[in-house]
Length: 79
Image (cartoon, rainbow, N blue to C red):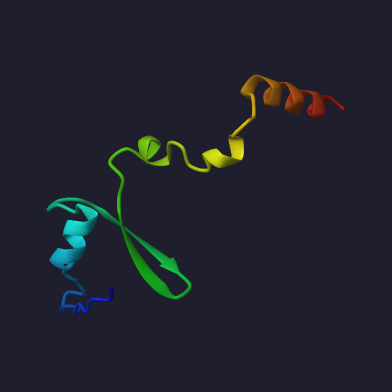
């Protein structure tokens, strides 16, 4: 979905209502602007970063026992 917005004389844009509704953006919310391969990407800023990152890449740790992993890492540092 590509929607057209216009940059105002004050270099401002309005986020279209369809996008606001889909992303749950409310008045007063903050957005993050990232540059990706020559594009500006707008992202809603998380209210709670730790909650937002919770479970990220959990598939990497499936089947890994945390205590055993730490023990093996510590052993590797000592050699």
